[in-house]
Length: 139
Image (cartoon, rainbow, N blue to C red; front, side, top):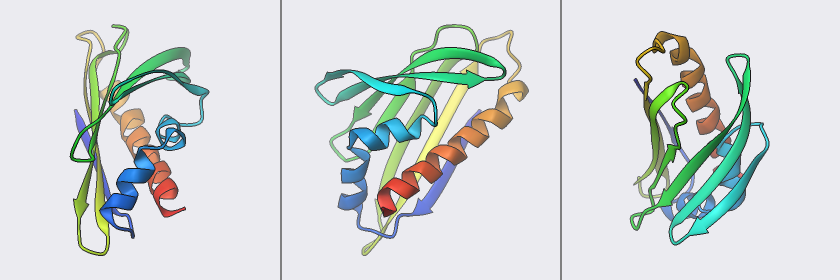
């Protein structure tokens, strides 16, 4: 299952990449739950967040890897309850005086978890992440 959201950032690529590199931006991507950066090593930032999804509370850990070209890859450390794999990427396409920001999120559920049960919430999460990112970049 894969979802993608894109938007014109209304600023140059360097500014958008700079904003995404800030701690507050990374934390805002994970929603309204309590999130904190728990580790930094090289170009990797590890974030732990507390969430409430599908009626259950939990804690999730994400690794954000900042790449040399300015893009960011991230992945959830899967605990085996719902997700077998959940990965994302932020890409920035230079459009001259502005840039297009693309957020991609794709995942595979465990074999006993039907994808249709998480499809709606995951799509909503991608939309919320893109909107949070847009607000940070345009601020």
